Amino acid sequence: MNCIPSCEILLPEIGKARIYSKMDICKSPGVLTIGIDNSEKNSVSFFDAGPLQHYRKIGSDSWPLQLEVNFRNIDKDRYYADACIKTLRKGKTTCFMHGYIDSAVDNVCGNRKLF
Image 1 (spheres, rainbow, N blue to C red):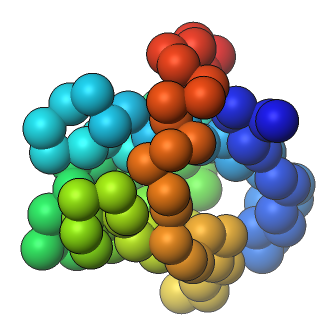
Image 2: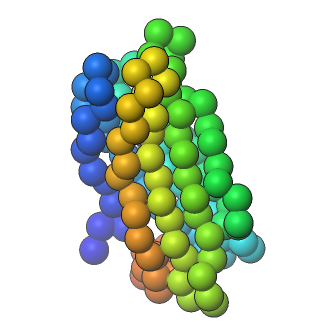
């Protein structure tokens, strides 16, 4: 089992970026951690489960990016997450996360360092 899943996405005009994610259900509410590694800048962001859409400025001064995350608790053992990166100079959005997360995954993986 890959306890810190990752994927590679293509950001318009910037190039490849590697995305890492981890969920901590021991926190209340649960916390989703998303790490982004690209040639411009690396970043790690934390999101509490809740009803709000989160917006975080990431990236560099030359290529500003906006991380957009919707992370919420559906019921006792399930969460839902949508996540996208918007290239602010071009207005293009690249999504990489969309779906349900079972909290049992966190129990199997335990706490591991993201970066």
